[in-house]
Length: 283
Ligand SMILES: [Zn+2]
Image (cartoon, rainbow, N blue to C red; front, side, top):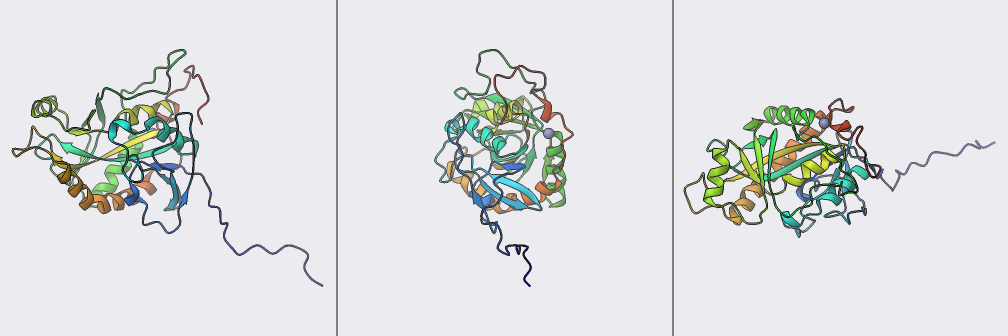
């Protein structure tokens, strides 16, 4: 007599779980090492994200990678579909976002290869749409502390244990780009006490907050900004060269940060819009 109960299928499910809890806004260098990845075609009310997010598992955590500049780096900083990117991550289940970025150092001690986990942000961009709440009605979220305290702590701890020269705190000023700063702008930023200058940190941080997401910026210094260094000023080639040299280091660091992120959020990021009259349900 044969057993009528069906035997379990030994083959793994060919369709991996199209959900994630952690998002990484970084280039393809950050997930090229994963054994199995699942690319998800996703559309949003704000159009398509920079590229289809790629899902994988790291340390038992489901992670979605989204290259903010596109798969072939086709989006310059002022053309990145920021709203679609954050919306797509949230729609996949992501609640905590890690955002590595290349930046210029505004202080001599923050030279190429230094890492800053900023705790403050200054917006000097001019053409980007920085909100999901475009009316009717007004929705004002707090951005007093733009970065997730739990994510920052995880990033600093992981960086220290990996031997990085890491600055715990500092101010990231975001310029419109794509040009680099003039010497006067750069000196002005430095004299204000700001630490690093980048081109993508806004509106990313603000949009993440508007979607109740935790958002942590990891700023990798690729050069000293024009007002700080004494040579000809920043060049595109220098930035790419330093970033390429550090991308595997940064990837290894993210692998250490991801398992350190809390499984249950206790920070205030998840209730940023609580009690506010939202014009739509969050995905
Ligand atoms: Zn948080």
